[in-house]
Image 1: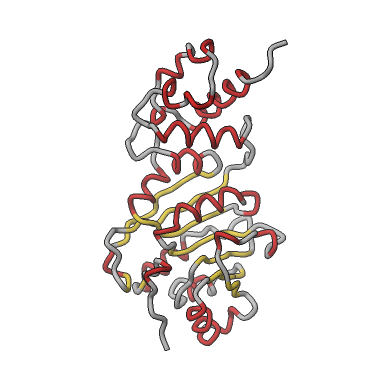
Image 2: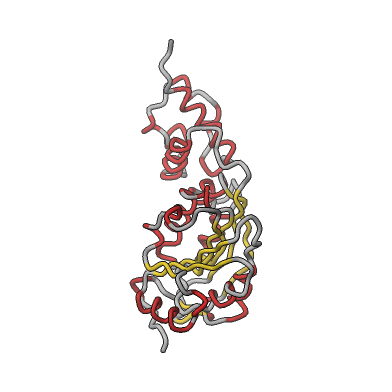
Amino acid sequence: MSVRPKKHLGQHFLTDQGIAQDIAASLSGTGYSQVLEIGPGMGVLTQYLLQKSFTTHVVEIDTESVAYLTAHLPKLENRIIEGDFLKLQLSDYFADQVAIIGNFPYNISSQILFRVIEQRALVPEFAGMFQKEVAERICEKPGSKAYGILSVLTQAFYETEYLFNVSRFVFDPPPKVASGVIRLVRKKEQQLPCDTALFFRVVKTAFQQRRKTLRNSLKSLGLSSNLKEDSIFDERPERLSVSDFVQLTQKIADDSLPTQ
């Protein structure tokens, strides 16, 4: 019995055991005792996670994969969540810290990352495989064309590390692109010193017109003429670090306060 990769689920099953071991080894196991793997497929990564000291759970949307895992990995008994991670509320299943890992479907990998960021209070560590271009973008530093929304919003809450490249020829079926494995470790300070919802809005709005200066790209936020004279608005968004965006958000929040 095997599982047929399904295009509509973005499934590309990893076939290289060595790479599966390396991904499993990317988790430190520090600060948590439970791990959740997203989209285990036929369990090539799962089998190595089950050898670790932490308790492994999986979430799988494909009923065929769930049947396969149930039959072939008895250690997973009562630890298979059948469903969509994007709709999963971690607190419904985990009372304490849980690391996230996986060979993520490329069509929803950014959405998975954003769900992790939303639920970061429960996720101290996150590791796994992305399309190489996306993995690089997540870890990129200011000043690069690859630096963008994913970079800023992830690095606001996590330390990022690009671990290694993965050839497209170690999958069934091979994807059209190369892959990269990254690790994120949550920062000690989980709260930003500014309005988090406004921070997200400022970052996303700024990068929607990344070639323009902030003075032009943030017009929709209704900034006062006085605020727009600040020199930070001469910059393009790719030049700003996370702390710069925090300061920018604070200035915009102050600007919108009613005058006495």
